[in-house]
Image 1 (tube, rainbow, N blue to C red):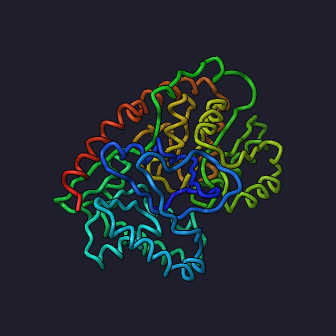
Image 2 (tube, rainbow, N blue to C red):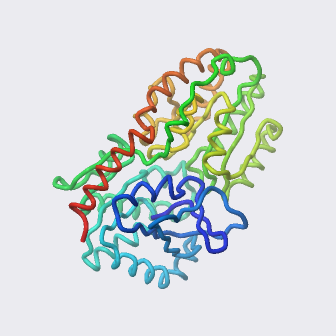
Image 3 (spheres, helix red, strand yellow):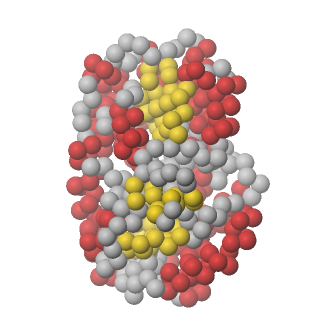
Length: 382
């Protein structure tokens, strides 16, 4: 799989895939869980440990970019092939470079596998989301490998109810599951103070997403905030996340003249991100690509209203009134301005969205995880 993993010394950390939130949901059903992924060195840990009881991590190395992939391919392939051979129940998480390579190795070795599809690579590599010179090739490769995996897998789990299933359907006789892997403890759900939501003053906006590429729509959000400031609409924005584009986005905020209205918080653990979201009035998700965004569900759970784009599985949880057109600065600007001029709307949005996301609470999702894992053990083990 590909994921946001960092290596600090000999330990592996993740801001949102710590042991309790990810591997720990599988360990009650298996003798051991082995995560095979890339990890990138960091000076300090962010998030929580990925490993834990009956859970290990196979580090494929800190390879990123075409050149490093070519140089590291022999070593990475050897490690990945060894892990695949040793797996009794094999899950491959799509889309991603590691997943595509794993699919090829399974085909060569005739190794059965199950697939998990968490996003649509067609959106990730769209013209609006990526300007990489190999964008078209990457789109063809990842869309093709994801579709092929869905057709060849013993079982397929999607993080959406319908969207990804329609784009990447499973073979007719394969078991199909549809539920999010968000980790929303029941205690996370708390009603927001309506007086605080509808208070006078600047509308406090927040976004939580990585800054590795343009698919998260940060630039459009900054442009919209700049337009609102020029119209004397009182808004401030907090961006939580980090990545290769952070310096570029900080420079854009300066160029737009809104540096004093935008706070770049950097990457933080998911618990800290949830706490920050709960202190804001509106979570804005201008993404060009998503599966079922974890950060959006967390915002809804803590009672912070969400505006999201009409991509991926977002329309499955947000009504049309809370959706905006992806990539449109005009749409983002208009939606935020309407709420800033009528903040009482936030109260209704908060209550309505929190009721909707209750179905994603830990106690509800774990029942689905348990049924899924039982199927993997009984029907998909080698």
